[in-house]
Image 1: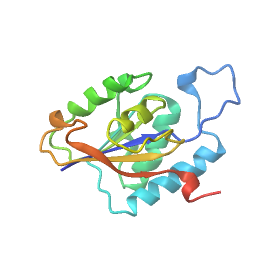
Image 2 (image 1 turned 90 degrees about the horizontal axis):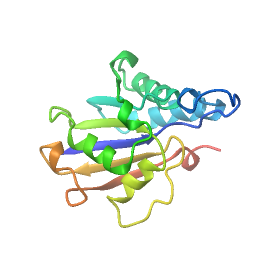
Image 3 (image 1 turned 135 degrees about the horizontal axis):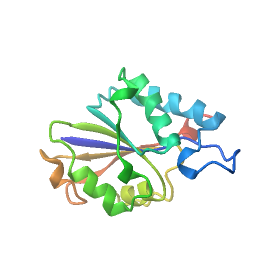
Image 4 (image 1 turned 180 degrees about the horizontal axis):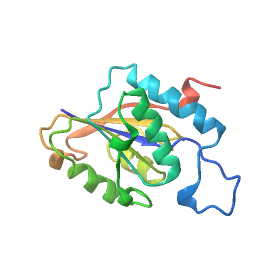
Length: 165
Protein backbone atom coordinates (compact mmCIF):
# COMPACT_ATOMS: atom_id res chain seq x y z
CA UNK A 1 0.00 0.00 0.00
CA UNK A 2 1.20 3.50 -0.88
CA UNK A 3 -0.42 6.62 0.52
CA UNK A 4 0.16 10.22 -0.44
CA UNK A 5 -1.32 13.19 1.35
CA UNK A 6 -1.72 16.27 -0.81
CA UNK A 7 -1.59 19.16 1.66
CA UNK A 8 -2.27 22.63 0.40
CA UNK A 9 -0.30 25.30 2.24
CA UNK A 10 -2.09 27.14 5.03
CA UNK A 11 -3.54 30.63 4.52
CA UNK A 12 -0.89 33.11 3.47
CA UNK A 13 -0.53 36.83 4.02
CA UNK A 14 -0.95 39.46 1.34
CA UNK A 15 0.02 42.30 3.72
CA UNK A 16 3.30 43.10 2.01
CA UNK A 17 2.66 43.62 -1.72
CA UNK A 18 6.39 44.07 -2.31
CA UNK A 19 7.16 40.45 -1.44
CA UNK A 20 7.66 37.95 -4.21
CA UNK A 21 4.87 35.35 -4.31
CA UNK A 22 7.33 32.66 -3.27
CA UNK A 23 8.25 34.61 -0.13
CA UNK A 24 4.77 35.25 1.28
CA UNK A 25 4.44 34.05 4.90
CA UNK A 26 1.44 32.52 6.63
CA UNK A 27 -1.09 34.90 8.10
CA UNK A 28 -2.58 34.47 11.58
CA UNK A 29 -5.25 32.03 10.37
CA UNK A 30 -2.58 29.99 8.60
CA UNK A 31 -0.48 29.89 11.77
CA UNK A 32 -3.56 28.64 13.63
CA UNK A 33 -4.75 26.11 11.01
CA UNK A 34 -1.43 24.42 10.15
CA UNK A 35 -0.62 23.11 13.65
CA UNK A 36 -4.26 22.17 14.18
CA UNK A 37 -4.47 20.11 10.98
CA UNK A 38 -1.04 18.59 11.66
CA UNK A 39 -2.18 17.40 15.10
CA UNK A 40 -5.45 16.16 13.63
CA UNK A 41 -3.60 14.05 11.05
CA UNK A 42 -1.01 12.75 13.51
CA UNK A 43 -3.85 11.82 15.86
CA UNK A 44 -5.20 9.50 13.17
CA UNK A 45 -2.15 7.28 13.51
CA UNK A 46 -0.54 8.38 10.25
CA UNK A 47 3.18 7.56 10.14
CA UNK A 48 4.82 9.50 7.29
CA UNK A 49 8.05 8.18 5.89
CA UNK A 50 8.83 11.49 4.21
CA UNK A 51 7.67 15.10 3.99
CA UNK A 52 8.22 16.91 0.70
CA UNK A 53 7.49 20.59 0.14
CA UNK A 54 7.41 23.33 -2.41
CA UNK A 55 10.13 25.90 -1.69
CA UNK A 56 7.50 28.64 -1.24
CA UNK A 57 7.68 30.08 2.28
CA UNK A 58 3.97 29.41 2.96
CA UNK A 59 4.25 25.74 1.93
CA UNK A 60 7.52 25.11 3.76
CA UNK A 61 6.21 26.77 6.93
CA UNK A 62 3.10 24.57 6.73
CA UNK A 63 5.32 21.51 6.29
CA UNK A 64 7.37 22.55 9.32
CA UNK A 65 4.26 22.53 11.54
CA UNK A 66 3.47 19.02 10.29
CA UNK A 67 7.05 17.85 10.84
CA UNK A 68 6.82 19.01 14.44
CA UNK A 69 3.50 17.21 14.99
CA UNK A 70 5.01 13.98 13.65
CA UNK A 71 8.22 14.25 15.67
CA UNK A 72 10.33 14.90 12.58
CA UNK A 73 13.03 17.51 12.10
CA UNK A 74 12.24 20.46 9.84
CA UNK A 75 15.73 19.97 8.37
CA UNK A 76 14.62 16.57 7.04
CA UNK A 77 11.84 18.02 4.86
CA UNK A 78 12.78 17.54 1.22
CA UNK A 79 12.33 20.77 -0.74
CA UNK A 80 11.49 20.28 -4.41
CA UNK A 81 11.50 23.36 -6.62
CA UNK A 82 9.38 21.61 -9.22
CA UNK A 83 6.32 21.63 -6.93
CA UNK A 84 6.10 25.43 -7.08
CA UNK A 85 4.10 26.49 -10.15
CA UNK A 86 3.74 22.83 -11.17
CA UNK A 87 1.12 21.41 -13.49
CA UNK A 88 -0.91 18.36 -12.52
CA UNK A 89 1.18 16.07 -14.68
CA UNK A 90 4.34 17.34 -12.94
CA UNK A 91 2.93 16.31 -9.56
CA UNK A 92 1.82 12.91 -10.88
CA UNK A 93 5.29 12.35 -12.31
CA UNK A 94 6.88 13.37 -9.00
CA UNK A 95 4.66 10.86 -7.14
CA UNK A 96 5.57 8.08 -9.57
CA UNK A 97 9.26 8.76 -8.95
CA UNK A 98 9.12 8.55 -5.15
CA UNK A 99 11.35 6.04 -3.41
CA UNK A 100 9.65 2.68 -3.04
CA UNK A 101 11.12 2.53 0.47
CA UNK A 102 8.50 5.13 1.44
CA UNK A 103 4.93 3.99 1.99
CA UNK A 104 3.40 7.22 3.28
CA UNK A 105 4.39 10.66 2.03
CA UNK A 106 3.12 14.13 2.92
CA UNK A 107 3.36 16.47 -0.07
CA UNK A 108 2.98 20.23 0.48
CA UNK A 109 2.06 22.50 -2.38
CA UNK A 110 -0.42 24.73 -4.13
CA UNK A 111 -3.70 25.19 -5.90
CA UNK A 112 -5.10 24.91 -8.47
CA UNK A 113 -2.70 22.05 -9.13
CA UNK A 114 -3.46 19.99 -6.00
CA UNK A 115 -7.21 20.21 -6.59
CA UNK A 116 -6.71 19.12 -10.20
CA UNK A 117 -4.55 16.18 -9.10
CA UNK A 118 -7.07 15.10 -6.45
CA UNK A 119 -9.84 15.10 -9.03
CA UNK A 120 -7.99 12.52 -11.14
CA UNK A 121 -8.64 10.06 -8.31
CA UNK A 122 -12.29 10.62 -7.43
CA UNK A 123 -15.72 10.41 -9.03
CA UNK A 124 -17.03 13.12 -6.69
CA UNK A 125 -15.73 16.47 -7.83
CA UNK A 126 -13.62 18.36 -5.33
CA UNK A 127 -14.32 21.96 -6.32
CA UNK A 128 -11.44 23.33 -4.28
CA UNK A 129 -8.96 22.13 -1.68
CA UNK A 130 -9.09 25.00 0.82
CA UNK A 131 -5.94 26.33 2.44
CA UNK A 132 -4.43 23.69 4.72
CA UNK A 133 -6.82 21.14 3.23
CA UNK A 134 -5.63 17.54 3.08
CA UNK A 135 -6.51 14.93 0.47
CA UNK A 136 -5.44 11.36 1.20
CA UNK A 137 -4.82 9.15 -1.83
CA UNK A 138 -4.40 5.40 -1.28
CA UNK A 139 -3.05 2.95 -3.82
CA UNK A 140 -2.83 -0.81 -3.37
CA UNK A 141 0.54 -1.01 -5.14
CA UNK A 142 4.12 -1.94 -4.31
CA UNK A 143 5.83 0.65 -6.51
CA UNK A 144 5.07 4.35 -6.82
CA UNK A 145 5.60 4.02 -10.57
CA UNK A 146 2.21 2.25 -10.73
CA UNK A 147 0.38 5.17 -9.07
CA UNK A 148 -2.47 6.15 -11.41
CA UNK A 149 -6.25 6.73 -11.47
CA UNK A 150 -6.56 2.98 -12.10
CA UNK A 151 -4.71 2.07 -8.90
CA UNK A 152 -5.36 4.95 -6.49
CA UNK A 153 -8.37 6.72 -5.05
CA UNK A 154 -9.29 9.51 -2.66
CA UNK A 155 -9.68 7.96 0.79
CA UNK A 156 -10.18 11.13 2.83
CA UNK A 157 -10.60 14.87 2.38
CA UNK A 158 -10.47 17.25 5.30
CA UNK A 159 -9.93 20.94 5.82
CA UNK A 160 -9.86 23.40 8.72
CA UNK A 161 -13.38 24.82 8.39
CA UNK A 162 -14.80 21.35 9.06
CA UNK A 163 -13.39 21.66 12.57
CA UNK A 164 -12.70 25.34 13.29
CA UNK A 165 -14.51 28.70 13.07
